[in-house]
Length: 224
Image (cartoon, rainbow, N blue to C red; front, side, top):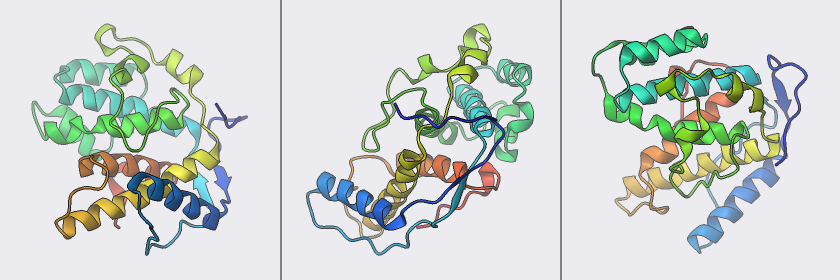
């Protein structure tokens, strides 16, 4: 497992990828997957991007965890109590705060947060099992603090460390390309090329785009 060593978890990481190589790699992966020639009419990512500080991504995963748990039936009072105990309450986005404080809300939407959590826990080297063409693993919940016993996030925080930036930039570009392909298929009334619901790719791309942005979670733009 390749890891980025950080002196300070509050430090941003400037990345200067070989953008042509990154796109070539994405197209190669997609050609192999789809079994067809492929050249995407998409702009490449920027040749200098900034990865958020590690601690921000750790907080984001913990916050998503509690919000998704509430969507799956975890009591909102307990979710809010755990977020407060872990210093995450103020990390809720405006939309998440509205959802978690309500008795119901858009439950189905927030259940899909599991896909964002899956890619981010992969980015944090919590697991090595991220497959862009498969749903999140059934053991995801076991990789996160146990809300049922109000488990501290200390253990999770201690082992979380960014995967190498080449991998993260590769995921950023590949998910962008996959998003374009599934959107194009939907517009042209074709079957999804990856056998995945579009939300899976969208949630994952949203999460990785957030890692390389400076705006809030709700403000991420993922146009294709």
